Image (cartoon, rainbow, N blue to C red; front, top):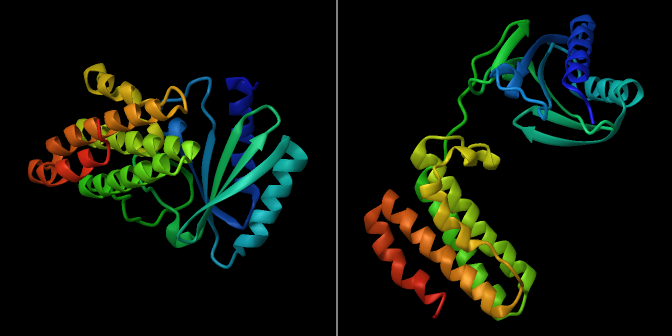
Length: 247
């Protein structure tokens, strides 16, 4: 396990290396450090803006070698957004290091958790918050597949689909209460009065009766949340969704 001091030292070293790399024109802190919300479990989040003419793949390869040879990386994975690649490293210490390598025109704040260290930024379109109706649509899709999975005896798929209903209900709650909705970041901010009903959707075993019970609970909390978002839609969805889960 890493310590906060070790994390800070590594982040400082990476920023210093970025300043010395002529292929990198800008750098910023992102994530919890930029928001002033670090704790002992936080990872390192950095964004690098590439200099005009810098080859992204060459920079990626160079920095990946640096992470493995100098900083104890054991694996990495990539997440792409437009032309920016977020290379996520796992270090032997279990520290996660996320480095975004952005073309010059994509280097800039996508949200409040962005603190420029050096260089210039380009204005970026803000991330869009999903519309409740889109989350509702995904939730009833999961419900349809939960029904068929149970009927087919595909118990692990059924558990997955029931969990999908729950996840989308929780995201709807996050939107309703104005807390972060992505990847469970705001779930701890939801009031217990909201989340207590969702506990019944947890699948406690793969027995047929238990899958049906959790599925019915999922439909119940989904319809309750839909009613808060769109009462007319809740009325239209009630009959077909309850028909998926006979008593």
